Length: 165
Image (cartoon, rainbow, N blue to C red; front, side):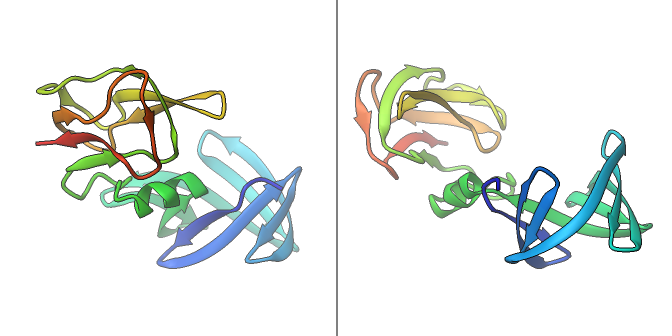
């Protein structure tokens, strides 16, 4: 099974995991036949019920259209939940103030500098953790106020890396 994700549809959270066509929803095995018919569109057969599913971007975020009915939805994997717990909003609606280390690691590179405007998704710095390079990206648009770490230094989980104006 893949890592469990929280999928919130129309305000209701569901814990979902998948593996080779098998699905677990809230700990219950679900047998479904899922066929992608076009980018962002699927036919989903659960038992004898057929669902036409389409993913779109709505005014307030992502939307899922199921058999013509529109539902707001959000997918949170363990990393998204960790980022939120560290005060890093993933939806860009909160005022950008700081970015904290999501894990302990070593600062390999600093990609941004004080005074630099950044957009959501721009690389701020690169952390090495467990022999993997992790690009720490800006969670929203803003201007870098200060870089709180130095290249080659170790950081702890939750340590402030970058502050924004």
